[in-house]
Image 1: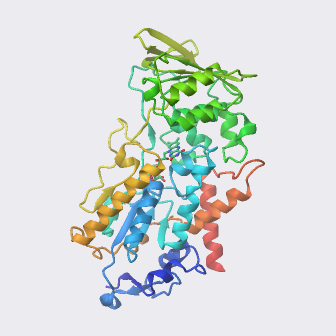
Image 2: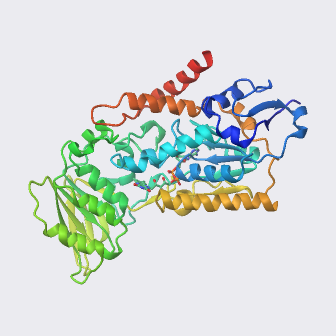
Image 3: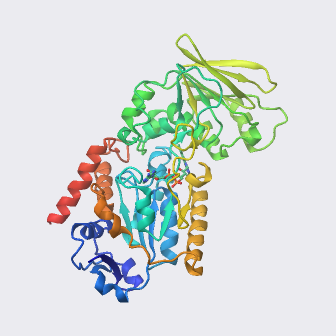
Length: 473
Ligand SMILES: Cc1cc2nc3c(=O)[nH]c(=O)nc-3n(C[C@H](O)[C@H](O)[C@H](O)COP(=O)(O)OP(=O)(O)OC[C@H]3O[C@@H](n4cnc5c(N)ncnc54)[C@H](O)[C@@H]3O)c2cc1C
């Protein structure tokens, strides 16, 4: 039986410096197109028949599932220590980088710029992007664990954690992650379980949670359009969700001000918005620390014309969500245990993320095997920013390298990408992402840095068209 293997034919340095070569996706597509012919590749690899493979060095085959920061950083660290490894990143969407694209707020382009670093990784480091391939839907997890020596699962957490208090089923309760995904132009067809948002959130909002995501959602929903210049916010979604800025936002959190989870920088940024009047409830007169200090200054500062009154409630615990007429009401226990209620149009929950199962349970039980590793939000329960997940990825990569070095794991036993590629009918490569990226930047409206494509079919048409054009050329 003829089968395919990869043989490294050039030095690692020449692999990395091959700037004249097409993007990795292009080279790998050629492998997919003609699997049985020996094929020279300017990325330093050629595809060979099995009888030539006797001299091939044992080359670990590594699958990373999920192209968010955790997956990309793990691949990057692995590449440093394992220059000979075959590394493939599988991604459910045709576009990479997970929450960098669909979580990080649209007005935080500095943070989103980490995507450029990952772009360079794909172009220079001989790491293959297999997009539009959801493991578990397009191919079974077992097929991946059977085909690769090492499997890194970095699929993140997609679902907003539900508030665990009694809730009227007619109450309007929406997760902050869902709202921010929408403002980040997430393609609704990619998350059929979470129906697209189709109505304005309303003029009085109650946000539950005192983390950075809560502050993100308050800022994005109240920030004047003039201050969104340079962002890639989805203007249609913004217009739909907030035709006008809300008049009142209550932000409810259990902790005291000095234990609030949001970063001081996030609060500071919110406090610079001149259209907000910021008030505080539940701030102890004895509370110390930078958050308390900043809040005291902000609350006392003169505000000119304000569009929105934002009240931060500390030491306030949600008790129930109910409906009163057309309003959704959040019952709470205040700092001294006194019950009170806030009525609004929508309760927005920003209390973390969990697995996509009905009960937030682990939705990925199929990932079993001594050679399976989990990184990032998936493993850490939705905790940590990009920098913290980079460290986690670094530790995971070190464990994998050590396991290969000590023989706990055997490299070169499973044939990797060539085994699974024939099963994947609709995958898109890194060149597909580059074509989408170019198109989005070209179509950016006035004062926006890109207009993201929200329709999955349109994305795929661009990705596949690019493939056809380059192949025909
Ligand atoms: C609203 C919001 C704002 C944030 N803002 C910031 C910020 O300003 N600064 C900061 O440092 N951090 C921020 N974070 C945190 C940061 O986004 C996370 O730390 C980071 O994205 C976690 O990376 P990850 O790779 O573990 O998960 P993710 O980024 O979620 O990546 C997971 C990837 O796996 C893919 N995937 C899932 N299932 C499958 C499957 N079955 N098959 C193939 N692929 C799959 C997903 O499509 C996704 O691309 C924010 C998070 C949120 C939610």
